Length: 404
Picture 1: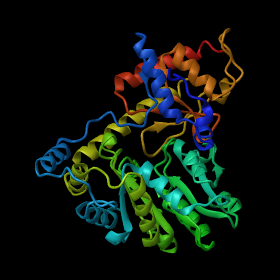
Picture 2: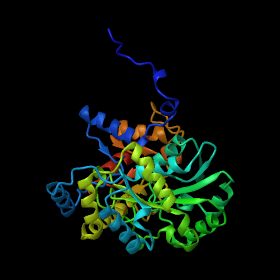
Picture 3: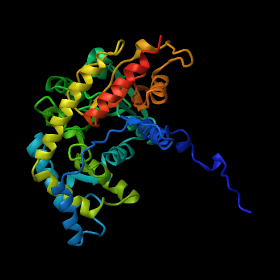
Picture 4: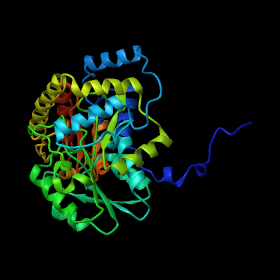
């Protein structure tokens, strides 16, 4: 009779040493509680609660009717890559040739492709922290060492050029960050990006990977791409995608604009893993980039209204330190004032304890900051209805009031 169990020894050290995605784990815990009949409000996943705009869905349906059901070129349909070239020039002042564009199954795959093609064991990659949860593990998977440069709430969660300079060594291959940022919502200004670019430009063979997936959810009035700064134009890889700005999370479409040798290497890597992204999805994505942007604009305005509501309500909770993020759809409160407090049965030692306490006692799911390189904080996604946000924060306020 065959064994029904498998020894852990069958698994590689690579997977055994990899941390599980904290956002996905918390979302599953929330679903498990819901299945038990609890009214859980999940503010853990970074997913717009809006549906993909109808005109984009219609374009995908038409592509299916037109027979776009076959394999695509590994770096993407020519039509989509040409649209991305035009988008980069129009929106970002970035000049790319079609050969420098690679379309992937989400921006996450784009970043994995870059790490696996640019990093060797012994190399270092600087990650500006707080960082998106997967950056750290993707770099570790490549065999390189992630080096974090941390900025707390007193810096609006934005690392300085001086901090970056101090972290660079002869082994540093690239600097990786997002703006607008997941998990903090912070947006680097032109002056801050110019200072970072000046540091990078002084170091030969040092590259920047700029994750701009939240580009269209930016409340500053103008998105700035660091790759548009002349001193680092040739050493910046710009990552973007369709998940956030077009509410296309389930479509799994991301892309890069990169120096030609790096783009070619990413296409080579992708060719051995997944090949090209879905054909009809790419057709719809090409249409989305040059179609009516009103739904995206409306979504951004809705997020801005929610942000203001959430900030106002969170600032009413004693001990919460809350900044004023200028993009994305996250708030990243510092809640270290609650460490060491207890309700008589549970003691809060860190942000993980705090988030578990909220899930169990308030039935609100948020993600501990430790997953993002910030142990004193938690991430709350306001990609939810205003009614759910108000109720969730009411519950949070009530639950933490029991901690003394």
